[in-house]
Image (cartoon, rainbow, N blue to C red; front, side):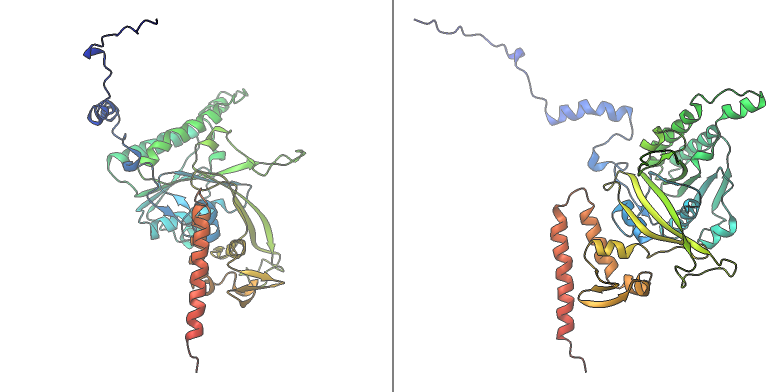
Length: 397
């Protein structure tokens, strides 16, 4: 006969107690004591972008944020990079102007490493030069000290969301060692110190920029390798790889010249008988807000009028079936709207309906979840059908 299992007396002190919510919060409170910014994600002011700034181009906005109205996240680092003459400085100036006029930013600070900031151009693009501080800098170390000191002062002054920063460009800044070597007439190599200094700058300003509600705009150059057998879609930036992983948004730009003969309606100078602007292509190489590697090919920068606000929208609208192409003409809601040249840059056409519908579809489609997309597309189609029914019910004399 099997023996009954021996009973073990369990002392009350041996019973493992489950911590109450109060005890758990008390334990976690040690982090709050050490870090004033520690909080639950649902209450964290740093975890969510409080505002967005437009680039002045709806299609460029769309690939950056998933909305035609938003582009640059406040409190984050955004970098535009490409070869020369891709409109990097022009785009920065336009974003700064929009931040001041539409988003309530009181000041802008422009760290200029190329002496690229021009008073007349900035004013023409809408910047207020009396509120735009121009800061020429030579070395990464000087730039870092000035930016970190400024961000710290803004945090201490509780001046959140009042200043926008720009660095134009990262690739043109030297390290302090390069100047020291020149003074010593030394020809020793860089040994990666420039890339390390640039990485330090990017790392140190990330947290402070978020806390100060300060958007940081950067430009950078890229390297082309003519001998590369299989050219990559995403090009290498100047300054090493590490800074690339710190920015929240990376937008790669490339251009082709727009010949005067190709667009006779575009504004042009009397002396420009060959080229009146550039056709701009943009692709997001990194994006923390919507899926990356989304591009738009049909943007336009005119040398006299700047970045075209509406170019690129037609391409997006056809992708989402808001507009259909039939041969060389286009159709919307069953009605012929004509050739592309007659409406693709028309404010009257886009602002009266298609733009808002396109924005809804973009936000649903690019929201890291396609669950809402089918329902929203059906909702937009229902709105169109309802509008058509209303028109049918109207008696036209």
